Image (cartoon, rainbow, N blue to C red; front, side, top):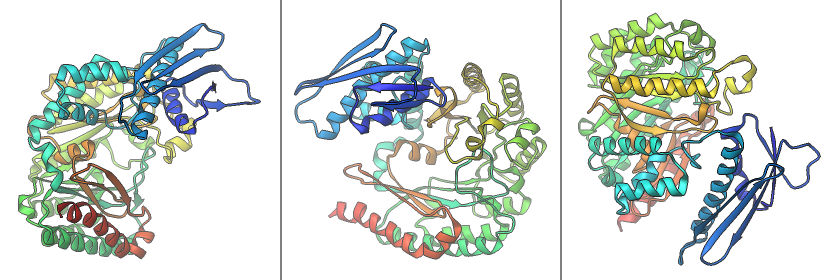
Length: 500
């Protein structure tokens, strides 16, 4: 599918136009200016702007479909704020043109960003009532009531789970990345290396990881900064040996301030084939009882197709083993739209989940991530169409409600099937505080380890600064001291200078 766009000369507007086109058409290419290739659609867009307002007119050539919209520009707005209003007005017109032309409705409106609930939090913090905030979302972003109500339900649950959510900016959370897995899943783009044959790299990596924990912990203690949550992710943190886990958690207790008072410590044990009695005993030793065990699907053929070398039976067995060994807050993940699966297969996964009833269930919608094996070889992975994917999501919403789960966090991704979302559900009081922190961007998250991304959020201005450790273990092993020093510089900038 090729769409020719006339009238847009600002390159900064190309990306939002592409993102919206992707909601309607697969493999869509936008062309600007003269092109030798014939176009399936030609859309003319015109922007006019004065001191008080911006107007956009649009037309799909040869169809008679037209759209016009005007939004105000307020006195005193920065150049960035003005550009955002121009972009949103253009997106508004463009989305309505494509909805009219295709007959498809986009319930998230012009929103293509990852964190919709962050937008609602901001509006409520600014003093708007719920009714006013909802009206703004509907008017400015074309979001439908169904999604606005979902956003509000999640915001309410987050504030119940973390009553001081707007006041944790002076604390930090910590993400510790372990970049190894038994195998790499076809849809995955996380830093994850098959652990077999990596013994030398694992040892070197853990040396650097311990160093980072020590130095970051020293800084936190020196400046009396509290830690809200710690999350061990990856990769699969339980890929390393029980002895290595024991040393790692011992370092955590030694390095970080007041570990006994940290609100939540989570270990991602997502691959059931990494869970053993010895590793569960280590978790018990350090009073860690919140883990993830991720089936993704309860179809063995699907697991084989996506590169997960465990069986459905092993998932169930390791779930019960974890319960037996004191894991009292277990999360499980399911993915909607995996290759070869439709509503029947997804309903079977929900039926199997009902037999286990974990404290939380995260329902992901498959996303074709740019660097994944699945995206590179799309022809090998047949997935359901958008109507069937939407029916699967409806099944998930209905099932979670019937079984006492409520949504508590949400995020979206580019190239997500059906323009849907990923939603975390839990029983009341069993929410992942870390997931709330990372999604709503209310505090600094310090990323430690290979592939770990830090997100420094200034406690006064809210300005976000990103910093990532290298994804490759060798690069990390060569320069972990440098990356630690860089993070400490950012922490000084955020917390020490802002306190002066």
